[in-house]
Image (tube, rainbow, N blue to C red; front, side, top):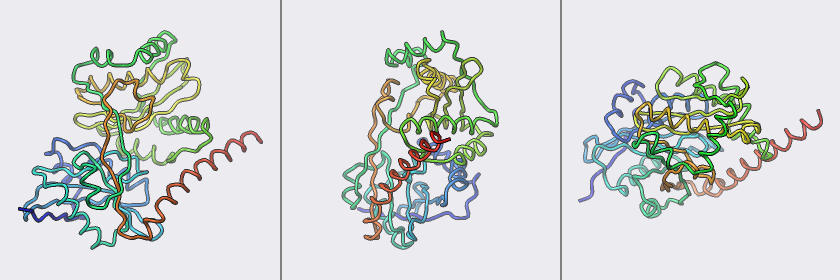
Length: 341
């Protein structure tokens, strides 16, 4: 018999109360925590919404997402593309069928005049989403099992990566945990260098990096690493951490890092640090051919969006195309400006 599933916003819940509640779920991630929510609220023009999920009048789970306004229309994402948030699936003590949860999401969205809903996670299947009118989009990642220890993880790295790690060590590259106030600027300068080589500009600004570091630096949810050669920084990694997983949120480097193998060495240090902390998984937070060298398992994540306002449905592809074009134009302009200076 179908259950009556409802989602109820919790606008007045405190950060500590929220974290205490979701700590009871084994599959909660760093992206479900109030610290990450504060990063979103402080660096993006939107607000995190937290929910209680009820089935037949009893609490069976909790959920969260990010609400923004685009062209005067409300857009809700769990996670929202462009927010650098990889997981915001619902957390359940007793999960209802996905179709019933999606019906509850649709009811809430229509009552609150949400124009577009984007969501994803392994709780759903592509068939679940398609059956409720969601347009499917591709989301993927690689996950490394760390439970076997450093030797086991090393054995799964691609030979080319292992060779570059050895080369970096012989070349005098040193990796340190970098908690200095200069890390955000150092990271972002390298990120601009990476995008510039492709004729693009970064998809987020320095403020995003500064906010993440400032907000999470006093928690156990952040790791910032820098690779050095002759006391010069050549590569950086920013990883997020929860009770069981380390997430490769971002990495950047100068062009000089590549022949040294510094990018491979800094990732190896991130893996070692995660193992030392007793974590059991490393998530690359997205696909990409270069991530295959870690030797992880490819994971396809069901995701999709549904437009409750037909006009916004027509606008969405143009918004995404315009964002990509903006990145290209600004990147070319920056390169031309440097040539003319």
